[in-house]
Length: 272
Image 1 (cartoon, rainbow, N blue to C red):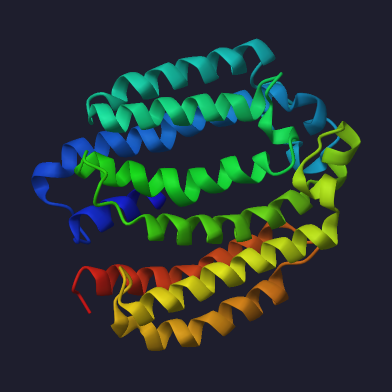
Image 2 (tube, helix red, strand yellow):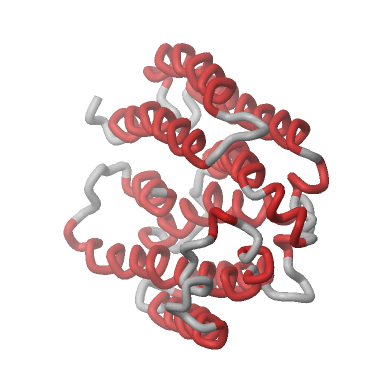
Protein backbone atom coordinates (compact mmCIF):
# COMPACT_ATOMS: atom_id res chain seq x y z
CA UNK A 1 0.00 0.00 0.00
CA UNK A 2 2.66 2.66 0.89
CA UNK A 3 4.62 1.68 -2.24
CA UNK A 4 1.52 2.19 -4.38
CA UNK A 5 0.90 5.58 -2.75
CA UNK A 6 4.34 6.69 -3.95
CA UNK A 7 3.60 5.46 -7.46
CA UNK A 8 0.28 7.30 -7.47
CA UNK A 9 1.90 10.53 -6.25
CA UNK A 10 4.56 10.30 -8.97
CA UNK A 11 2.26 9.44 -11.87
CA UNK A 12 -1.09 11.08 -10.97
CA UNK A 13 -2.62 7.86 -12.30
CA UNK A 14 -4.62 5.08 -10.63
CA UNK A 15 -3.08 2.63 -13.09
CA UNK A 16 0.48 3.44 -14.21
CA UNK A 17 1.37 3.62 -17.89
CA UNK A 18 1.85 0.18 -19.46
CA UNK A 19 5.47 0.98 -20.19
CA UNK A 20 6.16 1.27 -16.44
CA UNK A 21 4.49 -1.99 -15.40
CA UNK A 22 7.56 -4.22 -15.63
CA UNK A 23 9.78 -1.95 -13.54
CA UNK A 24 7.04 -1.27 -10.99
CA UNK A 25 6.23 -4.97 -10.65
CA UNK A 26 9.89 -5.74 -9.93
CA UNK A 27 9.86 -2.94 -7.35
CA UNK A 28 6.74 -4.40 -5.76
CA UNK A 29 8.39 -7.81 -5.46
CA UNK A 30 11.38 -6.18 -3.76
CA UNK A 31 9.30 -4.05 -1.39
CA UNK A 32 6.90 -6.88 -0.66
CA UNK A 33 8.03 -10.54 -0.48
CA UNK A 34 11.81 -10.10 -0.56
CA UNK A 35 12.33 -7.20 1.81
CA UNK A 36 9.66 -8.22 4.32
CA UNK A 37 10.87 -11.83 4.31
CA UNK A 38 14.35 -10.62 5.22
CA UNK A 39 13.17 -8.25 7.94
CA UNK A 40 10.64 -10.64 9.49
CA UNK A 41 12.98 -13.64 9.42
CA UNK A 42 15.79 -11.81 11.21
CA UNK A 43 13.30 -10.40 13.70
CA UNK A 44 11.94 -13.87 14.50
CA UNK A 45 15.47 -15.21 14.88
CA UNK A 46 16.47 -12.66 17.50
CA UNK A 47 13.04 -12.49 19.17
CA UNK A 48 12.98 -16.19 19.96
CA UNK A 49 13.42 -15.71 23.72
CA UNK A 50 10.53 -13.25 23.88
CA UNK A 51 8.31 -15.27 21.55
CA UNK A 52 8.62 -18.28 23.87
CA UNK A 53 6.66 -16.36 26.54
CA UNK A 54 4.27 -14.69 24.09
CA UNK A 55 1.06 -16.70 23.46
CA UNK A 56 0.37 -14.63 20.32
CA UNK A 57 3.55 -16.00 18.72
CA UNK A 58 2.79 -19.68 19.34
CA UNK A 59 2.35 -20.30 15.60
CA UNK A 60 5.74 -18.81 14.73
CA UNK A 61 7.68 -21.05 12.28
CA UNK A 62 10.59 -21.10 14.74
CA UNK A 63 8.42 -22.17 17.67
CA UNK A 64 6.56 -24.97 15.91
CA UNK A 65 9.70 -26.38 14.32
CA UNK A 66 9.07 -25.55 10.66
CA UNK A 67 12.25 -23.44 10.54
CA UNK A 68 15.43 -23.72 12.61
CA UNK A 69 17.22 -20.73 14.10
CA UNK A 70 20.13 -21.10 11.67
CA UNK A 71 17.76 -21.41 8.72
CA UNK A 72 15.90 -18.26 9.75
CA UNK A 73 19.13 -16.26 9.85
CA UNK A 74 20.29 -17.54 6.47
CA UNK A 75 16.85 -16.89 5.02
CA UNK A 76 17.01 -13.29 6.27
CA UNK A 77 20.48 -12.75 4.77
CA UNK A 78 19.56 -14.40 1.48
CA UNK A 79 16.34 -12.44 1.06
CA UNK A 80 18.13 -9.22 2.00
CA UNK A 81 20.89 -9.75 -0.56
CA UNK A 82 18.32 -10.73 -3.20
CA UNK A 83 16.21 -7.66 -2.51
CA UNK A 84 19.19 -5.36 -3.04
CA UNK A 85 20.34 -7.21 -6.16
CA UNK A 86 16.92 -7.19 -7.79
CA UNK A 87 16.39 -3.54 -6.78
CA UNK A 88 19.10 -2.43 -9.22
CA UNK A 89 16.84 -3.52 -12.08
CA UNK A 90 14.48 -0.75 -10.95
CA UNK A 91 17.14 1.94 -10.57
CA UNK A 92 20.13 2.90 -8.49
CA UNK A 93 18.24 5.42 -6.34
CA UNK A 94 15.63 2.79 -5.56
CA UNK A 95 18.37 0.26 -4.80
CA UNK A 96 20.12 2.61 -2.37
CA UNK A 97 16.85 2.98 -0.53
CA UNK A 98 16.51 -0.78 -0.33
CA UNK A 99 20.04 -1.05 1.06
CA UNK A 100 19.07 1.42 3.79
CA UNK A 101 15.87 -0.51 4.50
CA UNK A 102 17.77 -3.80 4.88
CA UNK A 103 20.36 -2.20 7.16
CA UNK A 104 17.62 -0.67 9.32
CA UNK A 105 15.76 -3.98 9.39
CA UNK A 106 18.82 -5.77 10.74
CA UNK A 107 19.65 -2.92 13.12
CA UNK A 108 16.11 -3.19 14.48
CA UNK A 109 16.59 -6.83 15.49
CA UNK A 110 20.29 -7.74 15.76
CA UNK A 111 22.40 -7.00 18.86
CA UNK A 112 24.19 -4.95 19.93
CA UNK A 113 22.23 -2.21 18.16
CA UNK A 114 18.81 -3.92 18.44
CA UNK A 115 16.67 -0.81 18.03
CA UNK A 116 13.57 -2.79 18.92
CA UNK A 117 14.61 -2.71 22.57
CA UNK A 118 15.42 1.01 22.58
CA UNK A 119 12.28 2.95 23.41
CA UNK A 120 11.49 5.47 20.70
CA UNK A 121 13.74 3.92 18.08
CA UNK A 122 11.38 0.93 17.86
CA UNK A 123 8.54 3.27 16.90
CA UNK A 124 10.66 5.41 14.58
CA UNK A 125 11.95 2.50 12.47
CA UNK A 126 8.53 0.95 11.87
CA UNK A 127 6.69 4.24 11.33
CA UNK A 128 9.27 5.68 8.94
CA UNK A 129 9.30 2.41 7.00
CA UNK A 130 5.56 2.64 6.39
CA UNK A 131 4.97 6.37 6.29
CA UNK A 132 8.10 7.62 4.50
CA UNK A 133 10.25 4.87 2.97
CA UNK A 134 7.34 3.01 1.37
CA UNK A 135 5.94 6.01 -0.57
CA UNK A 136 9.46 7.22 -1.35
CA UNK A 137 10.29 3.83 -2.87
CA UNK A 138 7.20 3.97 -5.07
CA UNK A 139 8.12 7.46 -6.21
CA UNK A 140 11.75 6.48 -6.92
CA UNK A 141 10.61 3.51 -8.98
CA UNK A 142 8.93 5.99 -11.35
CA UNK A 143 11.00 9.16 -10.93
CA UNK A 144 14.55 8.68 -9.63
CA UNK A 145 14.90 12.41 -9.01
CA UNK A 146 13.48 12.98 -5.51
CA UNK A 147 13.31 16.76 -5.63
CA UNK A 148 9.61 16.83 -6.46
CA UNK A 149 8.60 14.30 -3.82
CA UNK A 150 5.82 15.75 -1.61
CA UNK A 151 7.52 15.40 1.75
CA UNK A 152 4.49 16.76 3.57
CA UNK A 153 2.66 13.57 2.58
CA UNK A 154 5.50 11.54 4.07
CA UNK A 155 5.02 13.52 7.29
CA UNK A 156 1.29 12.89 7.24
CA UNK A 157 1.79 9.18 6.56
CA UNK A 158 4.42 8.84 9.28
CA UNK A 159 2.21 10.55 11.86
CA UNK A 160 -0.62 8.15 11.01
CA UNK A 161 1.79 5.18 11.12
CA UNK A 162 2.96 6.18 14.60
CA UNK A 163 -0.64 6.47 15.73
CA UNK A 164 -1.35 2.97 14.41
CA UNK A 165 1.93 1.37 15.47
CA UNK A 166 2.04 2.48 19.11
CA UNK A 167 -1.08 0.49 20.06
CA UNK A 168 0.44 -2.68 18.58
CA UNK A 169 3.18 -2.48 21.20
CA UNK A 170 0.48 -2.78 23.85
CA UNK A 171 -0.61 -6.18 22.55
CA UNK A 172 2.85 -7.58 23.39
CA UNK A 173 3.44 -5.49 26.50
CA UNK A 174 3.48 -8.28 29.10
CA UNK A 175 5.53 -10.63 26.92
CA UNK A 176 8.06 -7.88 26.12
CA UNK A 177 8.28 -6.95 29.79
CA UNK A 178 8.88 -10.58 30.77
CA UNK A 179 11.59 -10.91 28.12
CA UNK A 180 13.29 -7.70 29.23
CA UNK A 181 12.62 -5.79 26.01
CA UNK A 182 12.52 -2.07 26.73
CA UNK A 183 10.02 -1.13 24.05
CA UNK A 184 8.23 2.19 24.22
CA UNK A 185 5.24 0.46 25.84
CA UNK A 186 7.43 -1.13 28.51
CA UNK A 187 9.17 2.18 29.13
CA UNK A 188 6.08 4.40 29.28
CA UNK A 189 3.39 2.00 30.41
CA UNK A 190 0.11 1.13 28.74
CA UNK A 191 -1.87 4.29 29.43
CA UNK A 192 0.86 6.76 28.45
CA UNK A 193 1.62 4.78 25.27
CA UNK A 194 -2.05 4.81 24.33
CA UNK A 195 -2.31 8.57 24.91
CA UNK A 196 0.81 9.21 22.85
CA UNK A 197 -0.56 7.15 19.97
CA UNK A 198 -3.88 9.00 20.20
CA UNK A 199 -2.08 12.35 20.04
CA UNK A 200 -0.18 11.34 16.89
CA UNK A 201 -3.40 10.05 15.33
CA UNK A 202 -5.12 13.38 15.98
CA UNK A 203 -2.08 15.21 14.56
CA UNK A 204 -2.24 13.12 11.36
CA UNK A 205 -5.96 13.75 10.99
CA UNK A 206 -5.56 17.46 11.66
CA UNK A 207 -2.75 17.77 9.14
CA UNK A 208 -4.92 16.21 6.44
CA UNK A 209 -7.56 18.88 7.03
CA UNK A 210 -4.94 21.61 6.88
CA UNK A 211 -3.48 20.26 3.63
CA UNK A 212 -6.92 20.09 2.04
CA UNK A 213 -7.71 23.64 3.18
CA UNK A 214 -4.44 24.85 1.63
CA UNK A 215 -4.97 22.74 -1.50
CA UNK A 216 -1.49 21.34 -0.85
CA UNK A 217 -1.29 17.85 -2.44
CA UNK A 218 -4.67 16.92 -0.94
CA UNK A 219 -7.20 18.66 -3.25
CA UNK A 220 -9.39 21.34 -1.68
CA UNK A 221 -12.42 19.47 -3.02
CA UNK A 222 -11.76 16.89 -0.29
CA UNK A 223 -12.01 19.44 2.52
CA UNK A 224 -15.64 18.63 3.35
CA UNK A 225 -14.91 14.90 3.54
CA UNK A 226 -11.81 15.50 5.68
CA UNK A 227 -13.81 17.64 8.11
CA UNK A 228 -16.40 14.85 8.41
CA UNK A 229 -13.89 11.99 8.64
CA UNK A 230 -11.60 13.53 11.27
CA UNK A 231 -14.09 13.21 14.16
CA UNK A 232 -15.08 9.75 12.87
CA UNK A 233 -11.48 8.54 12.89
CA UNK A 234 -10.78 10.13 16.27
CA UNK A 235 -13.91 8.54 17.75
CA UNK A 236 -12.97 5.18 16.20
CA UNK A 237 -9.54 5.37 17.84
CA UNK A 238 -11.20 5.89 21.21
CA UNK A 239 -13.63 3.05 20.52
CA UNK A 240 -11.36 0.36 19.15
CA UNK A 241 -7.95 1.20 20.63
CA UNK A 242 -7.08 1.05 24.30
CA UNK A 243 -4.42 0.03 26.83
CA UNK A 244 -5.63 -3.56 26.80
CA UNK A 245 -6.31 -3.85 23.10
CA UNK A 246 -5.60 -6.58 20.56
CA UNK A 247 -4.59 -6.28 16.90
CA UNK A 248 -8.25 -6.51 15.87
CA UNK A 249 -8.79 -2.89 16.88
CA UNK A 250 -5.88 -1.69 14.74
CA UNK A 251 -7.23 -3.62 11.74
CA UNK A 252 -10.67 -2.01 12.13
CA UNK A 253 -9.18 1.46 12.48
CA UNK A 254 -6.88 0.99 9.49
CA UNK A 255 -9.85 -0.19 7.44
CA UNK A 256 -11.76 3.00 8.25
CA UNK A 257 -8.68 5.01 7.28
CA UNK A 258 -8.90 3.50 3.79
CA UNK A 259 -12.02 5.57 3.01
CA UNK A 260 -10.28 8.98 2.92
CA UNK A 261 -7.21 7.33 1.37
CA UNK A 262 -9.28 5.86 -1.44
CA UNK A 263 -11.10 9.14 -1.99
CA UNK A 264 -7.75 10.94 -2.15
CA UNK A 265 -6.54 8.49 -4.80
CA UNK A 266 -9.64 9.07 -6.93
CA UNK A 267 -9.52 12.84 -6.48
CA UNK A 268 -5.76 13.23 -6.94
CA UNK A 269 -5.90 11.32 -10.21
CA UNK A 270 -8.87 13.28 -11.53
CA UNK A 271 -11.38 10.42 -11.43
CA UNK A 272 -13.60 12.44 -9.07
